[in-house]
Image (cartoon, rainbow over all chains, first blue to last red; front, side):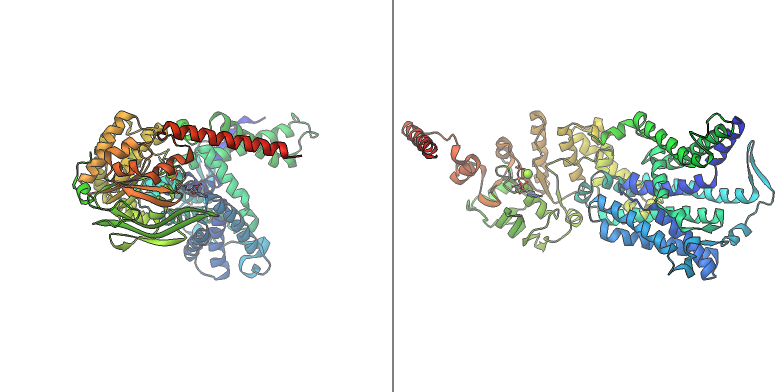
Length: 330
Length: 305
Ligand SMILES: Nc1ncnc2c1ncn2[C@@H]1O[C@H](COP(=O)(O)OP(=O)(O)OP(=O)(O)O)[C@@H](O)[C@H]1O
Ligand SMILES: [Mg+2]
């Protein structure tokens, strides 16, 4: 077994494009769930709207990528309003049901035959991000520290993606240390109490839903740009559940929770994947137990098991405060 | 004894349900709230005197909390209307009722567990510029106001003996402390009317005394206080006026002395089994009646096949 390679890959994954994209998705979810207590199970749709926003604008409308970004953000805002207006006045579980359904509706719409002229159906769209790469100031071929190396192109994507992560983390920090954030947290704790103190709960929930959704859409932009393509099935509910796993791993309602959670999540996936793959190849694990094609599923099971253990021994996540979590139960 | 002008202005008022007050700040008309077949609230007319402490009492399930919920926009009435300072208050959403200066606390305390005591307090302040999303992004725009709010919160916390808990999560407070926090937080709103739902429940007697003092201070500052309370000592101590509800209706109004003598109130509270002093003859008669009833029932049992 080549442990050097295993560690190298795990580190690459921790700082890779997926880690950044999912960090953005989870930062948005943290705004919804961690701070406001909104059970949004449709975060995948916000990423999809970001990704398709640029895809459709560039390939179908022939407009620039920057217009596409504006379209993606507008679509995320509209989607949040559409979800929020009927459900935010109701009990929390209604939002959960509506969002998970709406996110599947979005996916089925973009992969439908009827819309395939615009969205490319189940094949999706590709090569719409040339304008992004044209701005790449890095002309060298290799960048990185020590064993973690990326091509100039990858480095450019990572630079922008992680800058967005940093910016959104800073935004969360600023907001959560402001009176606005205080109102959000009070709504999470007891919205009637917030109401009795004169806060317009509906408006704050809506702002939170929109903001977290737009942050998710930023993740969608970076995902689409980094692979220069969008496919509908990328945006299945798995994205949402991975983002929740990341949030729980890092610690909900913690500013750095989603970032550390995402880095850890992706390096754990890489680690289990590489260890299993090498063990199978070297014959440590006989093919009758596990063959190469099953590794993708088994690694998810192992990471799931890991999260379960974490929940048992450290329910507050990496960053959380155990006492604070315990208050929930009264 | 209440030591305020409010009592004297209420002096000549008739002791009857729905009586008009000389300076009513809150007036309710034909308020009905049904839960299925049950009329939880059925108030024909009620007026609350400005600057007075009015106690709302009544047996469990009388509809006191529901009436509070309706007045403050936390529940929708099936019919009826009410005004505050002459302006319509019915149909106004809860948060706007609070902003207009009518603030309530909850019988089942709503401490915001995972916020600190200080954060709970600061949340109560209204008109915070930092509560707008865009201004929240620029701390210099709200830091100074935040300081002022914090100073006010500290004052109140001290008054309510919670200053040592300032930085603890509200979820770690005891039941009584939560009651105190909720009351102090409501005062952060700078209300004109406070509606307290059983504010003294679970608060220790010594602190109750000092709280009663605070409530009297509120009145001295010109605030109108409305409170639900089961402890008659408390009611006797601070209320200028008492309104009694039973089965959704207002069955009596008056000063606490008059209420204590009111037969309808005694019946509502104690039902048929009340232990009002009986003469020996009455007692004997009741026993005989009970015996007769038992005998009749026993006979019926035997008569069955
Ligand atoms: N949400 C609800 N759904 C159904 N019935 C309700 C609801 N809320 C209150 N009730 C009923 O309305 C009646 C009045 O209840 P309410 O809570 O107003 O009483 P209360 O006077 O505050 O009593 P307590 O002194 O015990 O607090 C009760 O019979 C109660 O069962
Ligand atoms: Mg009650």
